[in-house]
Image (tube, rainbow, N blue to C red):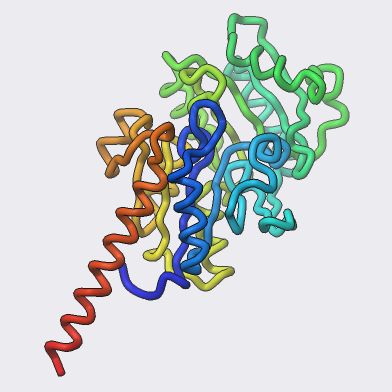
Amino acid sequence: MKGSLSGAMLITDLDGTLLRSDGSLTKQDMDALYNLGNKGVVRVIATGRSLYSFKTVAENRLPVDYVIFSTGAGVITCPDGRLIRNIHLDAGAVSSVVQVFMEFGLDFMVHQPIPENHRFVYYATGRDNPDFHRRLARYSQFCQPLDSASSNISSASQLLAVVNHDNSASVLTALRSKLTGYSVIRSTSPLDGKSTWIEVFAPGVSKSQCAAWLVDRLNIDKELVLAVGNDYNDLDLLEWAGTAFLVDNAPDMLKKRFTSVASHDHGGVAEAIHLWLSEFTRSETRTRVETNSCQ
Protein backbone atom coordinates (compact mmCIF):
# COMPACT_ATOMS: atom_id res chain seq x y z
CA MET A 1 0.00 0.00 0.00
CA LYS A 2 1.64 3.23 -1.15
CA GLY A 3 0.69 6.86 -1.21
CA SER A 4 -1.22 9.30 0.96
CA LEU A 5 -4.46 8.47 2.75
CA SER A 6 -5.97 11.57 1.15
CA GLY A 7 -5.90 9.59 -2.09
CA ALA A 8 -7.46 6.45 -0.64
CA MET A 9 -10.99 5.02 -0.58
CA LEU A 10 -13.10 2.63 1.50
CA ILE A 11 -15.97 0.82 -0.23
CA THR A 12 -18.21 -1.23 2.04
CA ASP A 13 -21.31 -3.26 1.39
CA LEU A 14 -24.34 -2.37 3.50
CA ASP A 15 -26.63 -5.28 4.47
CA GLY A 16 -24.81 -8.05 6.28
CA THR A 17 -21.58 -6.05 6.28
CA LEU A 18 -21.95 -2.56 7.71
CA LEU A 19 -25.47 -3.01 9.09
CA ARG A 20 -25.98 -5.41 11.97
CA SER A 21 -28.76 -7.99 12.02
CA ASP A 22 -31.08 -5.43 13.64
CA GLY A 23 -30.31 -2.77 11.00
CA SER A 24 -28.10 -0.65 13.27
CA LEU A 25 -24.36 0.08 13.21
CA THR A 26 -21.85 -0.81 15.87
CA LYS A 27 -20.14 2.10 17.61
CA GLN A 28 -16.81 0.72 16.37
CA ASP A 29 -17.93 0.91 12.74
CA MET A 30 -19.38 4.39 13.08
CA ASP A 31 -16.25 5.70 14.82
CA ALA A 32 -14.06 4.10 12.16
CA LEU A 33 -16.00 5.83 9.37
CA TYR A 34 -15.63 9.21 11.09
CA ASN A 35 -11.93 8.55 11.60
CA LEU A 36 -11.42 7.83 7.90
CA GLY A 37 -13.19 11.06 7.02
CA ASN A 38 -10.84 12.98 9.30
CA LYS A 39 -7.90 11.36 7.50
CA GLY A 40 -9.22 12.42 4.09
CA VAL A 41 -10.24 8.94 2.95
CA VAL A 42 -13.22 8.82 0.57
CA ARG A 43 -15.97 6.66 2.12
CA VAL A 44 -18.36 4.77 -0.15
CA ILE A 45 -21.27 2.40 0.43
CA ALA A 46 -21.95 -0.11 -2.35
CA THR A 47 -25.35 -1.76 -1.96
CA GLY A 48 -27.80 -3.78 -3.99
CA ARG A 49 -30.62 -1.77 -2.47
CA SER A 50 -32.57 0.73 -4.56
CA LEU A 51 -32.22 4.38 -3.62
CA TYR A 52 -35.66 4.26 -1.96
CA SER A 53 -34.71 1.19 0.06
CA PHE A 54 -31.37 2.71 1.08
CA LYS A 55 -33.07 5.83 2.36
CA THR A 56 -35.40 3.79 4.58
CA VAL A 57 -32.46 2.60 6.65
CA ALA A 58 -29.63 5.06 6.27
CA GLU A 59 -30.55 8.46 4.88
CA ASN A 60 -28.66 11.36 6.50
CA ARG A 61 -27.15 9.29 9.29
CA LEU A 62 -24.12 7.65 7.79
CA PRO A 63 -20.78 9.49 7.55
CA VAL A 64 -20.06 8.60 3.92
CA ASP A 65 -19.28 10.55 0.76
CA TYR A 66 -20.92 8.43 -1.97
CA VAL A 67 -23.50 5.68 -2.24
CA ILE A 68 -23.31 3.16 -5.07
CA PHE A 69 -26.82 1.70 -5.14
CA SER A 70 -28.70 -0.89 -7.20
CA THR A 71 -25.41 -2.80 -7.57
CA GLY A 72 -23.83 0.05 -9.53
CA ALA A 73 -26.71 1.21 -11.71
CA GLY A 74 -26.76 4.48 -9.77
CA VAL A 75 -24.52 6.70 -7.62
CA ILE A 76 -25.35 9.63 -5.37
CA THR A 77 -23.15 12.08 -3.53
CA CYS A 78 -23.59 12.50 0.22
CA PRO A 79 -24.99 14.20 2.12
CA ASP A 80 -26.74 16.20 -0.65
CA GLY A 81 -28.08 13.15 -2.50
CA ARG A 82 -27.15 14.39 -5.99
CA LEU A 83 -27.50 11.67 -8.64
CA ILE A 84 -24.28 11.42 -10.68
CA ARG A 85 -24.67 8.02 -12.40
CA ASN A 86 -27.75 6.35 -13.82
CA ILE A 87 -27.68 3.31 -16.16
CA HIS A 88 -30.75 1.45 -17.44
CA LEU A 89 -31.91 -1.22 -19.89
CA ASP A 90 -33.82 0.02 -22.93
CA ALA A 91 -37.20 -1.37 -23.96
CA GLY A 92 -35.74 -3.87 -26.42
CA ALA A 93 -33.37 -5.28 -23.83
CA VAL A 94 -36.15 -5.55 -21.25
CA SER A 95 -38.32 -7.46 -23.70
CA SER A 96 -35.48 -9.87 -24.50
CA VAL A 97 -34.70 -10.62 -20.85
CA VAL A 98 -38.39 -11.04 -20.00
CA GLN A 99 -38.66 -13.63 -22.77
CA VAL A 100 -35.65 -15.55 -21.44
CA PHE A 101 -36.94 -15.47 -17.86
CA MET A 102 -40.28 -16.84 -19.04
CA GLU A 103 -38.54 -19.58 -21.05
CA PHE A 104 -36.75 -20.61 -17.85
CA GLY A 105 -40.02 -20.57 -15.90
CA LEU A 106 -38.84 -18.02 -13.35
CA ASP A 107 -40.72 -15.81 -10.91
CA PHE A 108 -39.39 -12.31 -11.55
CA MET A 109 -39.77 -8.54 -11.24
CA VAL A 110 -39.09 -5.75 -13.76
CA HIS A 111 -38.00 -2.58 -11.97
CA GLN A 112 -38.63 0.94 -13.24
CA PRO A 113 -35.66 3.19 -14.07
CA ILE A 114 -33.86 5.12 -11.33
CA PRO A 115 -34.93 6.91 -9.16
CA GLU A 116 -38.29 5.08 -9.16
CA ASN A 117 -36.75 1.61 -9.27
CA HIS A 118 -38.47 0.51 -6.07
CA ARG A 119 -41.57 0.26 -8.28
CA PHE A 120 -41.94 -2.83 -10.45
CA VAL A 121 -44.19 -5.20 -12.33
CA TYR A 122 -43.92 -8.91 -11.67
CA TYR A 123 -44.55 -12.29 -13.23
CA ALA A 124 -45.49 -15.23 -11.01
CA THR A 125 -45.47 -18.83 -12.22
CA GLY A 126 -47.78 -19.95 -9.43
CA ARG A 127 -45.25 -22.38 -8.02
CA ASP A 128 -44.29 -22.38 -4.34
CA ASN A 129 -41.74 -19.58 -3.88
CA PRO A 130 -42.07 -18.07 -0.39
CA ASP A 131 -39.23 -15.56 -0.75
CA PHE A 132 -40.68 -14.19 -4.00
CA HIS A 133 -44.08 -13.67 -2.38
CA ARG A 134 -42.45 -12.21 0.71
CA ARG A 135 -40.86 -9.53 -1.46
CA LEU A 136 -44.17 -8.86 -3.21
CA ALA A 137 -45.83 -8.37 0.18
CA ARG A 138 -43.10 -6.00 1.33
CA TYR A 139 -43.52 -3.82 -1.79
CA SER A 140 -47.26 -4.34 -2.26
CA GLN A 141 -47.93 -0.61 -2.65
CA PHE A 142 -45.32 -0.32 -5.41
CA CYS A 143 -45.98 -3.34 -7.63
CA GLN A 144 -48.54 -4.86 -9.99
CA PRO A 145 -48.72 -7.98 -12.16
CA LEU A 146 -46.89 -7.94 -15.46
CA ASP A 147 -49.93 -9.08 -17.44
CA SER A 148 -51.87 -5.97 -16.47
CA ALA A 149 -49.04 -3.55 -17.14
CA SER A 150 -46.91 -5.11 -19.90
CA SER A 151 -47.97 -2.50 -22.41
CA ASN A 152 -46.44 0.17 -20.15
CA ILE A 153 -42.97 -1.39 -19.92
CA SER A 154 -40.31 0.71 -21.58
CA SER A 155 -36.88 0.97 -19.98
CA ALA A 156 -35.94 -0.65 -16.67
CA SER A 157 -33.15 -0.41 -14.12
CA GLN A 158 -32.99 -4.19 -13.72
CA LEU A 159 -34.87 -7.48 -13.70
CA LEU A 160 -34.79 -9.69 -10.63
CA ALA A 161 -35.65 -13.40 -10.45
CA VAL A 162 -36.06 -15.27 -7.16
CA VAL A 163 -34.72 -18.83 -7.37
CA ASN A 164 -34.65 -21.67 -4.86
CA HIS A 165 -31.13 -22.12 -3.51
CA ASP A 166 -30.98 -25.83 -4.39
CA ASN A 167 -30.96 -25.25 -8.16
CA SER A 168 -29.65 -21.69 -8.26
CA ALA A 169 -26.15 -22.58 -9.50
CA SER A 170 -27.41 -24.37 -12.61
CA VAL A 171 -29.97 -21.63 -13.35
CA LEU A 172 -27.32 -18.92 -12.95
CA THR A 173 -24.92 -20.70 -15.31
CA ALA A 174 -27.64 -21.20 -17.93
CA LEU A 175 -28.79 -17.58 -17.71
CA ARG A 176 -25.28 -16.22 -18.04
CA SER A 177 -24.80 -18.37 -21.13
CA LYS A 178 -28.06 -17.12 -22.61
CA LEU A 179 -27.68 -13.45 -21.62
CA THR A 180 -24.08 -12.87 -22.62
CA GLY A 181 -24.62 -9.20 -23.42
CA TYR A 182 -25.84 -8.30 -19.94
CA SER A 183 -24.56 -8.08 -16.41
CA VAL A 184 -26.01 -11.10 -14.55
CA ILE A 185 -25.37 -10.98 -10.81
CA ARG A 186 -26.11 -13.43 -8.02
CA SER A 187 -26.94 -12.44 -4.45
CA THR A 188 -28.38 -14.13 -1.40
CA SER A 189 -31.86 -12.95 -0.45
CA PRO A 190 -31.72 -10.49 2.47
CA LEU A 191 -35.28 -11.59 3.33
CA ASP A 192 -34.87 -15.29 4.08
CA GLY A 193 -31.07 -15.50 3.95
CA LYS A 194 -31.05 -18.58 1.69
CA SER A 195 -32.95 -18.02 -1.56
CA THR A 196 -30.96 -16.74 -4.53
CA TRP A 197 -31.73 -13.51 -6.34
CA ILE A 198 -30.49 -13.37 -9.92
CA GLU A 199 -30.41 -9.79 -11.17
CA VAL A 200 -29.93 -8.68 -14.76
CA PHE A 201 -28.57 -5.21 -15.48
CA ALA A 202 -27.28 -3.31 -18.48
CA PRO A 203 -23.69 -4.06 -19.56
CA GLY A 204 -21.20 -2.29 -17.33
CA VAL A 205 -23.32 -2.47 -14.20
CA SER A 206 -21.65 -4.12 -11.21
CA LYS A 207 -20.12 -2.92 -7.98
CA SER A 208 -16.58 -3.23 -9.34
CA GLN A 209 -17.27 -1.46 -12.63
CA CYS A 210 -19.02 1.36 -10.84
CA ALA A 211 -16.15 1.57 -8.35
CA ALA A 212 -13.71 1.77 -11.26
CA TRP A 213 -15.77 4.61 -12.73
CA LEU A 214 -15.75 6.46 -9.41
CA VAL A 215 -12.01 6.14 -8.74
CA ASP A 216 -11.32 7.36 -12.26
CA ARG A 217 -13.61 10.34 -11.64
CA LEU A 218 -11.80 11.13 -8.38
CA ASN A 219 -8.30 10.26 -9.66
CA ILE A 220 -7.74 7.56 -7.04
CA ASP A 221 -5.39 4.59 -7.47
CA LYS A 222 -7.40 1.36 -7.06
CA GLU A 223 -4.47 -0.09 -5.10
CA LEU A 224 -5.46 2.39 -2.39
CA VAL A 225 -9.03 1.05 -2.26
CA LEU A 226 -10.22 -1.07 0.65
CA ALA A 227 -13.34 -3.17 -0.02
CA VAL A 228 -15.39 -5.00 2.61
CA GLY A 229 -18.27 -7.33 1.75
CA ASN A 230 -20.25 -10.40 2.76
CA ASP A 231 -21.92 -12.01 -0.26
CA TYR A 232 -21.69 -13.16 -3.87
CA ASN A 233 -22.71 -9.78 -5.28
CA ASP A 234 -19.59 -8.32 -3.61
CA LEU A 235 -17.27 -10.84 -5.24
CA ASP A 236 -16.26 -8.77 -8.27
CA LEU A 237 -15.63 -5.72 -6.05
CA LEU A 238 -13.47 -7.72 -3.63
CA GLU A 239 -11.44 -9.15 -6.52
CA TRP A 240 -10.98 -5.68 -8.04
CA ALA A 241 -9.94 -3.68 -4.96
CA GLY A 242 -6.37 -3.24 -3.79
CA THR A 243 -7.25 -4.71 -0.38
CA ALA A 244 -10.30 -6.81 0.46
CA PHE A 245 -11.87 -8.36 3.54
CA LEU A 246 -14.94 -10.49 4.19
CA VAL A 247 -16.98 -10.27 7.37
CA ASP A 248 -17.25 -13.55 9.24
CA ASN A 249 -20.93 -14.10 8.43
CA ALA A 250 -20.10 -14.51 4.72
CA PRO A 251 -20.61 -17.88 2.96
CA ASP A 252 -17.79 -20.35 3.64
CA MET A 253 -17.12 -20.67 -0.09
CA LEU A 254 -16.14 -16.99 -0.25
CA LYS A 255 -14.19 -17.04 3.01
CA LYS A 256 -11.77 -19.48 1.42
CA ARG A 257 -10.75 -16.74 -1.00
CA PHE A 258 -10.42 -13.64 1.19
CA THR A 259 -9.20 -12.69 4.65
CA SER A 260 -12.02 -12.67 7.17
CA VAL A 261 -12.70 -10.18 9.94
CA ALA A 262 -15.37 -10.09 12.65
CA SER A 263 -19.03 -10.49 11.67
CA HIS A 264 -21.35 -7.61 10.83
CA ASP A 265 -22.74 -7.85 14.37
CA HIS A 266 -19.31 -7.36 15.94
CA GLY A 267 -17.64 -4.48 14.11
CA GLY A 268 -16.15 -6.31 11.14
CA VAL A 269 -15.84 -3.17 9.02
CA ALA A 270 -13.98 -1.38 11.83
CA GLU A 271 -11.60 -4.33 12.14
CA ALA A 272 -10.95 -4.32 8.40
CA ILE A 273 -10.23 -0.59 8.50
CA HIS A 274 -7.87 -1.07 11.47
CA LEU A 275 -5.92 -3.80 9.66
CA TRP A 276 -5.78 -1.72 6.49
CA LEU A 277 -4.51 1.38 8.32
CA SER A 278 -1.99 -0.71 10.23
CA GLU A 279 -0.58 -2.07 6.98
CA PHE A 280 -0.46 1.45 5.58
CA THR A 281 1.51 2.61 8.62
CA ARG A 282 3.96 -0.32 8.29
CA SER A 283 4.38 0.44 4.58
CA GLU A 284 5.11 4.10 5.29
CA THR A 285 7.61 3.12 7.99
CA ARG A 286 9.42 0.74 5.64
CA THR A 287 9.59 3.45 2.99
CA ARG A 288 11.13 5.94 5.43
CA VAL A 289 13.69 3.39 6.63
CA GLU A 290 14.67 2.47 3.07
CA THR A 291 14.95 6.14 2.12
CA ASN A 292 17.14 6.96 5.13
CA SER A 293 19.38 3.95 4.52
CA CYS A 294 20.09 5.19 1.00
CA GLN A 295 21.14 8.65 2.13
